[in-house]
Image (cartoon, rainbow over all chains, first blue to last red; front, top):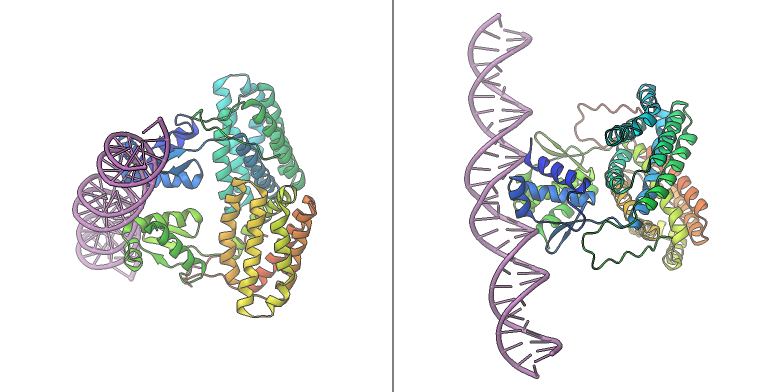
Length: 227
Length: 227
DNA sequence: CTTGCGCTCAATGTATACACGAAACATCAG
DNA sequence: CTGATGTTTCGTGTATACATTGAGCGCAAG
């Protein structure tokens, strides 16, 4: 496998898992010795991560970006626009099979959610598969690219949220409704159900992610200028 | 200025202007001698262009991507989702000044459009400024990033379209309505007016871009699988 | 004549040396 | 004591040499 790809996957995974928290300085030489490759593939990886918005180049090394509450709100605004549209398109262009399979798995979700950590992982796999199925059914490469970007950041936020079991059970039901709407070919319902789901998710995310994940306690100036 | 930046700007500009048509092979060494820099910044530029979707890495060099009719439809689907949302947000969060200025300039559009090539360029500057004003007013960095991506491809498609004067005059009117809706704080109208505008633009683009811009006449398999 | 194998070479992937620039620090003048 | 300025140093920017891979092509066997 290409070293640049490995470096990118590794760094991205570590950022998403929170191993590399916001504010962490990623220097090319330092990372190249740590990952056992030369600076060139590390540079490539850092550039890709910067394009993803996961890191930000500064004068002294590139640093892992922070996520403010305003960022969460902004991300959900974009998610709503993209996912609502994607769900609507999926309802019109779907192949039934993958959604039927996902519906069955979602019906199992309440049981999974009672199983603790492992079940939680399984549950999120179902949700991710649903996202992929919608993306594929929407059959729109541009939309797909935009969705991949928001899902990247969503995965990062997901880790920050405390996972209230009640909320997750409700979310599973919302997902089930979205799938039903898609299978019924009801684009408008699929779109609106997605809107509702994201609205509730955002409310929960804001409530359960009490503090911004920032590395440096100093210089925290997060003005919530979004109403 | 950084060499990698220059290489990126140059190549991107040439692709957008059609100097480098779809299918053109961009090899690292070849481009590095042409641009007068080493392979390293050229590599960086090509990677960024690939992330933008303007080129595609293949086994033998990276090639400039083609634009099919299906791509145009797909791009407009995404544009509609993004720009309608952005217009709605702009209506709620706007500062009046920039939109008042743009409204005045749009009122001048019919005169500009009678002036031929130079006026056309001026007209598109107004439209681009409107896009930027909406982006800024929406105050959403994630949405902004997605918008930059679609506007990149839109600029490429714009070059392919024959510019019907009647259509452009109508489009100017549609833009004026969007601006009025934003200034009135009517998010729903701004959003729907954007939808209408893009719908009409797409119809015109499909009618006036008769052939796919492809380099190799052989192996053209553009199934319009989007209804 | 067709098909499969293996060679060749060209283009990308990687490593590393050198150049450049900016930030931090120390030193000195006011 | 404070401010400015020169110096130093660390990190990225660029160039280039070397490694690797895989696509194209020719040759030989069926």
